[in-house]
Amino acid sequence: MAPSLVFLGAGNRGMAYAHHAHALGARIAGVADPRPERFQAFREAFSVERTFADWREVLEAPLLGEAAVIALPDRLHAEAAVALMEKGYHLLLEKPIAPTWAEVERVAQAKERAGRLVAVAHVLRYTPYAQALKGLLREGAVGEVVSVQHLEPVGHWHYAHSFVRGNWRKEEESSPFLLAKSVHDLDWLLFVMPGEVNRVASFGGLFHFRPENRPNKAASRCLECPEQVERNCPFSARRIYLEAYEKGERGWPLDVVAYPVTWEGLVEALRGGPYGECVYLGKNDVADHQVVVLEYREGQTASLHVEGLSRMRFRETRVFGTEGELFGDGERIWVHHFLRGERVVEVGRFGEASVRGGHGGGDGGLVEAFLRAVALGEEGLLEPFAEAVYAHRLTFLAEEARRTGRVVAVESPRP
Image (cartoon, rainbow, N blue to C red; front, side):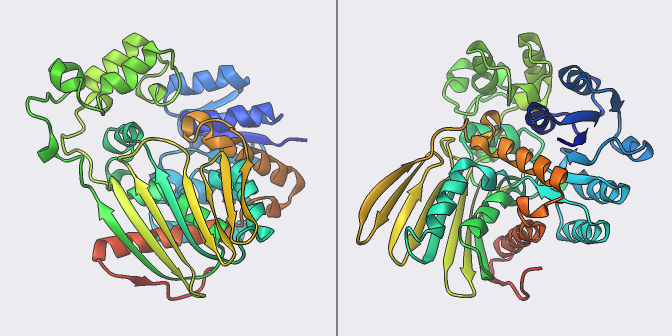
């Protein structure tokens, strides 16, 4: 029998996880969100009886189910996770675990004390593509893995939406870019090539989205920008939101700008809110490109490129081994064995690579695994929590390396 869930956060991520859970038979017992229109939509979609304007009110109520889903802003993750585990809930926790290493450790200690199941939303592990690629590596398709190259093409308009105009544009208000966007890419590297990391290096920063790159005669808002300037800007809010609406889109990212999604609501939001601002105003401070390099204790190497200035698509991964190499793009895997030649494994398409498409089946895979783990009491159905914590640790070390210009040693083994 599927467990009952309470949701903290009725935004895009909370709603997405709730749809998957509901489809799998879970009961949505309650929802907390300060925005009435959000929890009202949640209530209507899933026949939810208990609603709360503040997530802390959930702690004052009796247990509403076996598990809670935390889809709150990053800065609230640690406080909510610790309190809910102590209350008795198992957790599905949206990434990152927390925006500081001290808070991540606090969550880990609380999990140890409470003995709760915690599934961190490292959704890349739960895609059919990931399982197929991991299966090939287990069977020795390229021999022993020696090196991995991984690309996260964020997408130029996605970066502008989330990291220039959106909730993650200021590090002190959310998280570092690498943590917010790509902690699950470092987790993916650990998934593809397990082992102890010895040293971490990282380079990158905010290169393009700066006031000095603002086009001549550009207005502070896209809807006020001269047509000849706005039409030649790939980051135009009119293009990203209004033209998408005209094409029939109603979900993410439009539902972040205005909810419910209407033409009038979008126009009003673009005229007065952050999503209508020019991307060159200097209100953002997170990196728009970053490279991370890992050296393993056994000598293997891995690299991650996170690119805000890119065409949005599935992540791309190259794996080099002692007997061959492979390349995967989220839908297919090309394997070249040095002796046996080439073959192509067709995984198939399970939605888009982005939030809009459920991360290629990762969102649904995560929720299904979590519900089964809670129902059966089997933590082994989930990514080991210690592995998720280790991915966060490497992310913080990469940020230290980028800021200090040093190669940072990983001085103690993983937890």
